[in-house]
Length: 274
Ligand code: C2E
Ligand code: MG
Ligand code: MG
Ligand code: MG
Image (cartoon, rainbow, N blue to C red):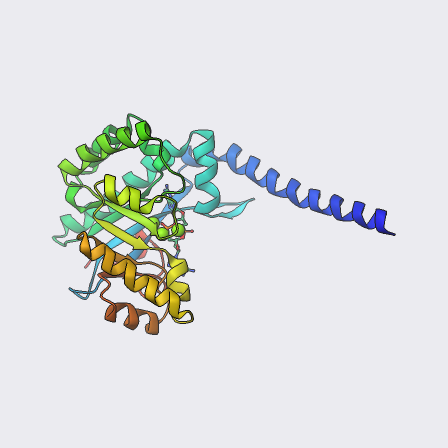
């Protein structure tokens, strides 16, 4: 009957939410130990520069695999770290690994840049820039080879924007560069481009996914590239996963591409320094 059916549905729904909640709590509970025990890792994904026809940069992506919880994706890990306050620790860990990685290239006499994702929450901390500067000094990494990627998941308040801007300007003076990640899908892209010292944009994968099937999307991407060029931004497409996308984006004047067609994220040890 209707009543018991309804009841059953509610019961199974809540069992599902219970499972999700439990997983969140476990991730939260295990995070500090994982950081202490060095169970987090960094994967590196290559970025292809169209003009030089070379890999000129790698993006650092955090990885965590737990024996009980399995693979914990950054999309799960980062929001929980932002809530439990461990985002600074995670960010520092990734920055240290990533800067060590790119410093190896430089010691071998090769040019390479590194792109590090940064939570805007991290940069709201007044110690953000100092922490990055000490990691630069510790690792001996050239500051002008470091890019920081921001996703604007929420709009900043005016005073927050001022504080982020002040710290960004100092880092920029040292040579660091800033990239607006997931361009086109955020809430305040154009506002950020207007006020923050951003030098590259990464066009969101959702646009690249629809490029070949939706003529409107193709026009949109063309527009985003032209708009970016008008204000001297370096344009990167993310999630490029086949040759047709690659060729079309090249024709459209994109500066750089990243995605499974170029290369998968890989552990640093598997990447040959050349
Ligand atoms: P993102 O910065 O936009 O990174 C791109 C994501 O797309 C990565 O997922 C990457 O593995 C995936 N990807 C790359 N190429 C392709 C492709 O051709 N097809 C498909 N389907 N996917 C592709 P991942 O590693 O799961 O990271 C998800 C998001 O988590 C990142 O998005 C970034 O916003 C965040 N994130 C990752 N690492 C860190 C970190 O160390 N710190 C912070 N704050 N955020 C991070
Ligand atoms: Mg990114
Ligand atoms: Mg992105
Ligand atoms: Mg993304």
